Amino acid sequence: MNMDNVVSYFSGGPAKIPNEVLEQVSRDVLQYGNTGVGVLEISHRSPAFLAILDNAITTIKELLDVPPNYRVAFFTGGGNGQFSAVPLNLMNRTGKADYIVTGTWSKSAAIEAAKYGTVQHVLPEGSTFMGVPDVSTWKLDPDAAYLYYCDNETIQGVEFATRPVPPEGVPLVCDMSSNICSRPVDISKFGLIFAGAQKNIGCAGVTLVIIREDLLDAPRSPHCPVILDYAVITNKNSNYNTPPVYAIHVLGETVSWVKRQGGIEEMKNRSDAKSKLLYSTIDSSQGFYVNEVKTENRSRMNVVFTVGAGEDRNKDLEAKFVEEAGKENLKALKGHRDVGGMRASIFNAVGIEHVRKLVVFMDKFRNENSENESSETRKLVDINK
Ligand SMILES: Cc1ncc(COP(=O)(O)O)c(C=O)c1O
Image (cartoon, rainbow, N blue to C red; front, side, top):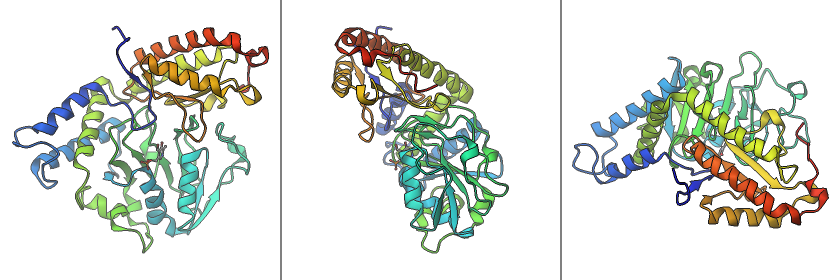
């Protein structure tokens, strides 16, 4: 395939949606099945939508091997909505919860939860967002209402290598917004998993929630809005009020695409191959490109890197990188505004051919620009090890 005129899109979200899915859902906007109208116009009580809902839920259950005592539901309000929903529904049991803060998103979740009860920080004070500190340094409370973590921090590019183990009886709650469906997960070890759809499983507007049934009986806050109430929304089969019909349709089509591609194991193999290619390009650049995340926690979804590091970091070259990459149709590589630098988000819909094109560009850019760098910057930076 000649990639010259093809846009390679590395956005952190909303992110690339498989072309096959885009073609299908755009046809459906004009005419959905034999309904005589488009999917944006069908009633949320119609048989057509109930079938869309059923397909989305069934496919998720199948793909992720969801045990029978778990419910799959769709919420509005995005990941941030769940930052509130989790404490509003689950914190009241003991009034306190443990948070493992490894980056911007788990930090935001902890700040939000503190409005509703006591947030206890599991990691030692001063932990930087460069990886997950060793378990021996963690402080876990057996009386916490739940243990919360974010499996993949999209902004810092930090991903858990293994699932945290909570004390006996403490439900594990996880934000999987940016790595759901990218590796196998043992759902039975979780109390609740949520994921905004707009990275790996569709478009913005819908948030997937997988919840263990017994937690639907947890003593929720009297202030929990009905729209964030896990029991209400799941018991009404995600159709309590008008749900985001189109976003649920896109989600259903995207997870069906994952299934056709070979399922979660295949997505894992692809993610491993894509991320290895990028990290090996960074690591063999003799310090021109730097990723400072602890090796075992380097994200397979969001590969962040800078030009040089510390005092030798060269932000001018980073800006030039993003600009020149853009001219070659390598788009959305600018790092998140909180951290700067570059970020290549390589969610499921980003094929390896795009990553191959990116690493060729990275090598070319380094060759063209490393002469301008001081020898200090070119020294091998080995902070990872
Ligand atoms: C891991 C993670 N959690 C939560 C959020 C927040 O999601 P939303 O913008 O849907 O509220 C994001 C957004 O990028 C994210 O990456």
